[in-house]
Length: 222
View (cartoon, rainbow, N blue to C red):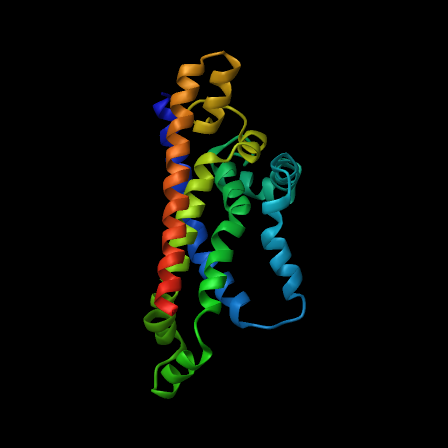
């Protein structure tokens, strides 16, 4: 077991959730309740990482964040190092390829909140901000929790984008999925099997938890 790779994967998943979930709450809420021109395009762009091959997404991220890009040059001037083949770049890529896993469950959760609940809160004198914190978030918590679990588990298992954007630098960009690939290349199937079992267990637990939340929500609304 490569503990440094596991630690880096957990660290990447943690910071992805910390940064992405607040953003996903705002985006999911806006998509759930607002109608505007181009909404279908915005939803399609959020969902693109679900259907785009990871290597293609990784290629475009390298073009967008590399040394020749304006974002890459700006970040390097700001921090003294680039984004490609660094943990910072991995984190940025992780936020992009996890967008649908974070936004879509939250959007569905906010869509399930009846509009008259919000209107009743406003009529009782609650501000929009107070309604958001006291009414909307508690009612949408199952979707938010589902997004958290899915984002965390998906980050741990991602391979293609991580390899394209971060390469395979021990202690810097070498995640557990990359370590498994390397072990297979070296015919070390026992180590690869153990690490794969760890990721499989996490994935099964995460998916079971999400389905259990969904069944609980259905019973609550029945």
